[in-house]
Length: 191
Ligand code: G3D
Ligand code: MG
Image (cartoon, rainbow, N blue to C red; front, side, top):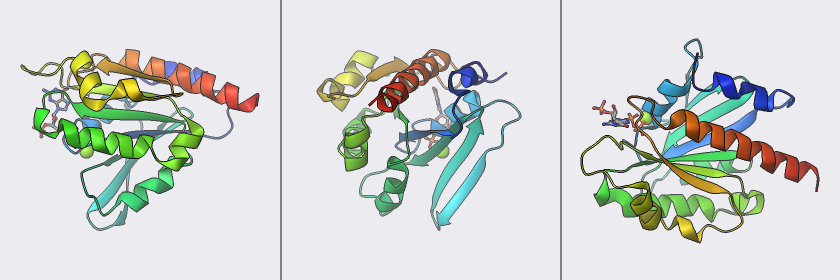
């Protein structure tokens, strides 16, 4: 059983897939996290719209995960934006031990948060402070400060320390995300 199997029932009544974006700088641990979360029989498909850029996708139950590397000054920025309008939840992965690139991660995160499609939808976002097992890793409190998470307005967010190698923190994080997506979808439906 994968970590996500237990969450499937949350979205059972939905006919359309629930789109979740998994974002972060390269080397933050996205691929490892996805491999740890997915059910053992899930297919991971790699979509390559253009040379040098790929989107990893897999579905679990009614959830469709799409993941890509973000790095500063990327020429692929306009391609990522295609995913924002349809997304219903965001997982932002940071390498808690990569102090040098924490400012780059912050810029990338805020580029997403300030995007018009995210501003208008205000989807829930979870930051995974990954690689917590590494000596010298920043604590979630430090990462919160570096990324400026306290400035997030009108959007449910949280941060969870994870170790993608052991899976620690992932179940808890995904439960938070699934239940917050549920609440957010219900609110929108009732508008
Ligand atoms: P990405 O998909 O975001 O680019 P990857 O990142 O999942 O490819 O991970 C990059 C490297 O970090 C991998 O090491 C991976 O094993 C490691 N990694 C991912 N998560 C953790 C973690 O929680 N703790 C530790 N210690 N390492 C982690 P390699 O050596 O294969 O490049
Ligand atoms: Mg990867």
